[in-house]
Length: 337
Image (cartoon, rainbow, N blue to C red; front, top):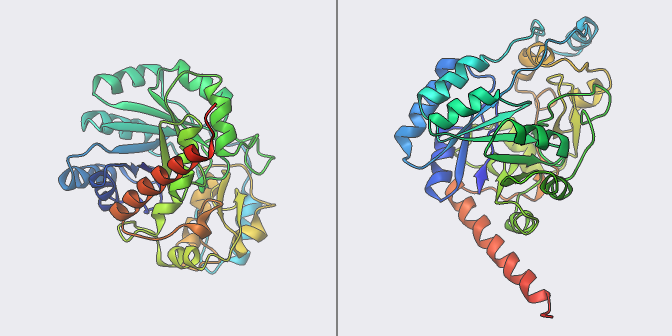
């Protein structure tokens, strides 16, 4: 069982440590954090647990050439807070990579792209296992070529940002969409690497399903958002608990496709949001920080409404028991030859 990296504050050292204590693998999310904050979180996690854990890095893309001024004016007219200045940055990627190697983080994963093969070798020399997030068979083949150890296969049912390497700027998900089971089967047919399944997994039966489909582990994000150890904002917790909103893919909050609960900001701005990440992320940051659930990015997977909140260690134990029960039940239903 893996607790997914959830950028924006939900992933915390306490959550990672509790997942590890229960026999799972927790991830810190380095995305959006400053270098010192990442170092502090790694140190705090190491102080809380001697179990392995991971750190996820955002791979920077090319600078956008899209003019976002019209979108900034649109957001300014709607929001109670002044939008931020749209800009490109690399999220201190190189410095965070060096930090992960220097601190010998057990597992380092990458989202939005791939590390350089030389950096993969350096991570291996530092003792790290390297994981790449992929959403299509083509991305999986590219990842295999740079020498990563495993792939996190993300289905379109996942909450939060899609890990696509490139955004076509047209389709809602930035490219072709595969549910987690379809993605697993297609990727397994193209590469011979251990696969971690992610996307809409909130129950032990979901875990059993992806293990039966060939995954070596299941990665869950939305299921952990309501844990007391998570840093999830109060308004986000309340929206998840209500379970009344549908989910949709949108570029409205960051300029990159991501799945979240439908609110006013998502509805009004999705058709107009440019494919310009992280420019749009910086533009909407002050608006999202108001705490208004109609203006926040309420990331959630498609099955969020049936997730059941619990402390992290209890959740891992429950998921494990449910998965075993589901596999046993399935075995009974398959008659012998």
